Image (cartoon, rainbow, N blue to C red):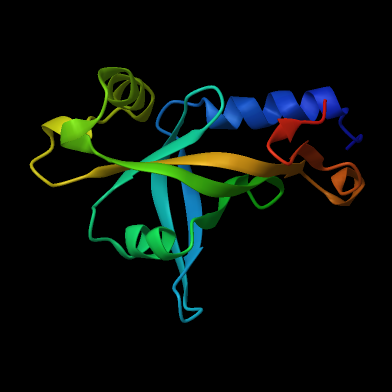
Length: 150
C-alpha cells in the first residue's frame, strides 16, 4: 500500500469519527494506576468526542480522577488513536438538546429514553494519529495540541 497524504489521513480519521453507530475503545486509568479498557459508542460534534455511559461506571470514576483517556477506532491495520481530555460530564437528563439529539442521531441510540441512568462524557482531542501499515508510521500525527496539523 502507498503512504497516504496528511489530507487523506485526516479525511479517514473524520470518516471513522462521523460514522453511524461507531464504537471506540476507551482506555482510562484509576488513581492507583489500574488500567480500564471498554468499548463504547461514540459521536463527533465537529471538534469533540462524545460518549454516553453509566454515571457509576469505572470509566466515569477514572476520568473524574484523571481526565486523560486514549481512544482507539478502526481495525488493527487501519487505526485512529486519540489522546483526549475530559471537557465535561453532563447527566443525560440535564443535557442540552443539541448535545443529546446529535448523540442520538449518530449513535442510533438515545440515552434519554433508555430506562438506565446515563451521563455524556465530552472529550477534547489533544492528539490524533492515523496509520495502516509500516509505510504509514511516519507522519501519522494529524492533530497536535488540539489543532489539526493539516
